[in-house]
Image 1 (cartoon, rainbow over the protein chains, first blue to last red):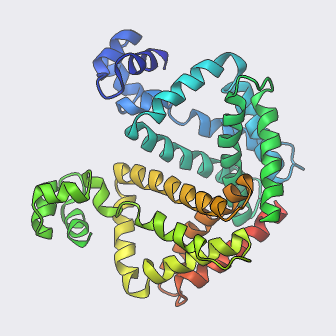
Image 2 (image 1 turned 30 degrees about the vertical axis):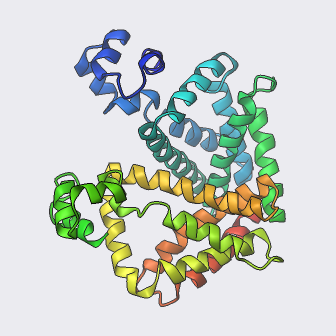
Length: 177
Length: 177
């Protein structure tokens, strides 16, 4: 949420109150808490990313391998969330999270949620449990590394393409380990 | 810390105060905060596990592959932390963490710390970056799954042996994905 991000940048996460965020966003306090259970959550958008990844895996072609299904989901993230126009917002959000331990904790838990969401979606395609776990775990790792690569302004590629290359680099690296 | 675990079990994490934990453990409040920056941390023991994993990787034989070095570290965890006599404590601690969102967040962040610690230790052995990332990520996943398998009272094997088998199951699963 942009209003919250601006306030966190201006005066820091700790010193910003929920009331101030609600005011800047034009929401009442009760509406705020209906959308966000706590102050941390304004930077995380609930389970939207987890849903995007699960849908992306579910809608991969039936013949896709587990890794191809994960790449299909990461391409959807590139189209819906990590788009060229959102690159700057995404980078600012990330800097705020990196600067605060509470936000880093919330992000860590969200990360586990993304992996669990991908694991579940793969199992629903009939992928065996351990294979689903490995593909989801490497998918989450690819998402993090691809995000770093994509954030570099020198990199003009879209997120989905970067993520697909990263996933295939990780598979090759794992085979040699 | 056993005193804190007992209190969390008796009255819940939320309702237990730092003063009560310090009293039951025979510590002053200031000593408590010297050891633990906050209430959550009493169940996590700082960076001990991260250090154990890094040392285990560093002390693996020079010719060990990245995955063998990770298995070597998980065997050390079995000798030093997840021992037969600590199995009950470890299971109780885990139930308390599972029941509280704040503790789950802290555990998620600690999990990222373990992966980062293994990645760093592998790089210091000269393992290339992406290979180190994959081996550490699958090592952390193996640790979680092996912990589940080992927690089953029907399983008489030691943690290190369970973890080694799990790691090799994960590699095989990844190769097929």
